[in-house]
Image (cartoon, rainbow, N blue to C red):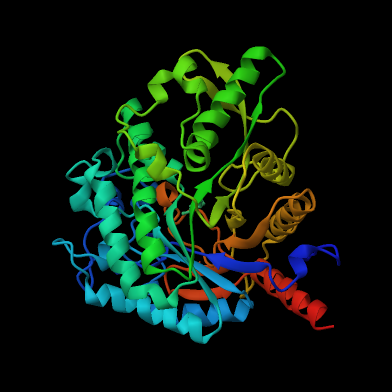
Length: 452
Ligand code: IFM
């Protein structure tokens, strides 16, 4: 099994960017070294049974110490770009000033990537809010949006010269709804109204950071990353079609519509006003909807929805026989293509990057080999889904596999493996899986095609 595209695919031209992605908390470890402050995920992990096996991020992939080896790994995969995130609590001290040791860590990584001719896609917030800000209300407190703007100003002033692309946030849906409404993620709050208010403040923070980024990094691309799954109705019954609409509205449109059109989905005002953020100040929507250079999209799976009287929808399994991943997510590349084509019809989109796509497999290392055939098929099928969407007119400029290496999978701890590289958490030994080699060979092959 290998990863292949049609010979005439636009995705084989040199301008299309391929990368691998990670996030700070998931790989770095060293969470109390060199002045790094506590984050909401450190605190969440300390609470019993919030994270599978009570795992935490104190060591993770020890990337804080092994970053040089990891950059060599990235290089050996032959990718064009690396997407990473900056840990806010590592680079900003309690008094709001920069932590030089934290800044130095990222400076070294970004310099090494530059020297290796690898483009850098940096995310400013991948869920690790400093705990001291959570203690003052976190994303429920409007003040946090201004703190994010200040952090953006300080860190982009320092790192401007090293970064090609800046994303303000990764997956506001997860940070706000999983963290403040469903309690599955840090900080673990479960008040129904909290999720949408936290989401509003995150989107506001994104908007407040944009002029700062325009000023500090005028030559970089600036955007935000949203996660989207494709929603389907469980049946053709009107009530299930309504459930599908509400799932799509609350999970996807709620986040993209403010960015693109400066409004939350109007249907919520009549059908589910409890999902409209309670505190929106005059001017907020204009701040949120300022132009961006790119939109990052993370795609993994689809969902099927049945009407539910109190929750509007409930998740059910597909009635067709389909394949699932080790984390229980349906594999649905056709849904990826549909999602992209639909979004392109709905909005006047900026260029898109697929900033994450990947699969959790029950990988095992046997005699030095991880034979992850399912992951190779997944990558092949999803890269081809992107190709079909491009053929249908969607402007997509890049694709990042999630993830470079196995890492801390949030509430699932280390039990789920998404990497192209296997991590032995006892020894920290890295082993490139068969999928990593297939991705590398696909990229090598692409280079040969355009050298001919
Ligand atoms: O590991 C996460 C990542 O941090 C955000 N997007 C989804 C991935 C897989 O769950």
